[in-house]
Image (cartoon, rainbow, N blue to C red; front, side):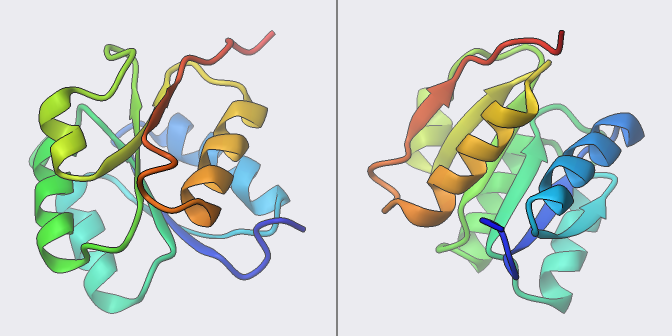
Length: 137
């Protein structure tokens, strides 16, 4: 399995999205942890090391942008993939702070897995791309 042993943190305030992302990743062998927002995600990151983080862009208490900035300060090498229903590309301000990839909601399981794979295997300069993805059928 491609994700075997890789630990991924999901931060999203929508339980249905957390469950979907977790199910897709776990089927590919990833070890998944979940948080309901950026504050909880930072707490999880203090407890254990993650290979990648998937964060919703719009969340209460600490949104994706604020989370990304704090994450970069404490864990500069952990790739962060943003999920967003509003955005279609990573804003320039976030690219400067290392937002690696944006996956638009709704997304297909294949596009999510491809984006996660890219941020885990490619150097940061190579994976700074946007994924405009297809909807579930």
